[in-house]
Length: 197
Image (cartoon, helix red, strand yellow):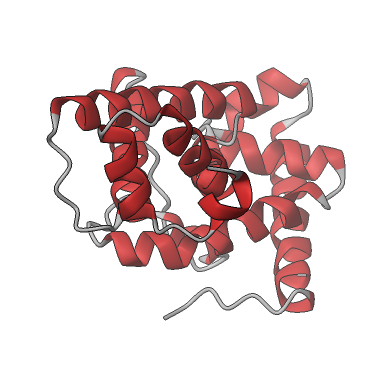
């Protein structure tokens, strides 16, 4: 069966074909959803190498589950895989003892929507695009502001720790964070992102 024919087959049918021994079906499924799944993982860990590792581990679990005949998702392949990826991300942060906490503050609450407390996979799917867009927007910040923002929000470092890492005074770090948030707000508005339900 050629690529054109595979494109017209549903995820559920491709899973069935793989279980029946058609290895190409799984390869096509992975390539069909790679961008969404990798983007989802990257938006959680904000590290390309780690995202690649978790992406690969996700599909190792997918293959093992399919080979054991334990797949019971009624054709909802992508939500199922994203749930596996999400659990692996949580496992990673637990092992690293730094589960992300995105605290709402008076100054800024844009990251409140990025918490890991959602058990609803549909919500995760809806937010995947938001994560990807936000990641791209953060890249547009000046380097010094972006660095402080990533250290503070994603790595959960204190301002004192950021000061030590960057060699800048705490006041300078606080100033950079303040301007990063102001600029991020502007970029979010310019890009038309909606961050509340």
